[in-house]
Image (spheres, rainbow, N blue to C red):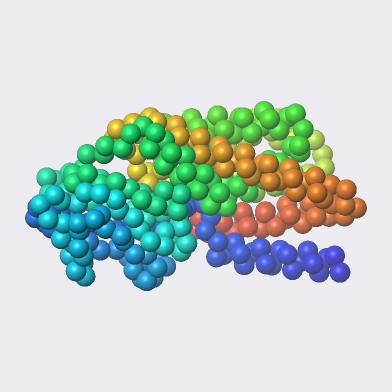
Length: 316
């Protein structure tokens, strides 16, 4: 019976892996172009999920009136609060790209945690440091909690190390590494194509799972912080890819970068805390070792599927 349950779990996880989004946020994108003073054309771009307009509705600033895909904002232009109704449900974020009449453009990101943005009638971003910090902390938390592969790597580290003193050094090493490559990539000092990065992220999960299943004292078990650091460099490039899609404000760029990373760490610590609470609840169960093995095989199955599909995408 236990074997049948385990086989069923593995099949279910394999099916989940084929449909789950790995680490990228689901983005809806809108383009707004100013054709004459106060006159705009707008449209949702194509999406793999179908018609975006069926699930998302823009709420334009006061003083702007929409007629189909034409927006009339008058002499004052598009100034005021813009929001998107429905964001955070079918789509975790909406990217609004505004092309102004003077040739400048700006990208605004709206999420469930930051559902509104203030427009000033031009590309100039007048948001204060506090507003930008709040927005990017929320984006960082949403990204890590919505990123299944990043979370599974952290969970794999927990299985590898256990809840002991070495876990602190392991998580710290992972944090330092992905913070380093995130900063270098976001600032344009390091660049790598997304498909190889995504494949390496999946392979990193497979390796950690295999090492956690070993009963012998492997190199990864002896030096988990080193393994976490090396693969953390790759995961940081994955974070940077998401941040590139979201965009960084020209004003307070470093604050946005720092607070996005803080948001990622908050989400990561929330995951560790939830895993610790679960471990405390089940640690006295007599079959906890079987549950541990089943969980590791499930994680490994998902990661192996991602690895094969992402490697295939490189050569497609």
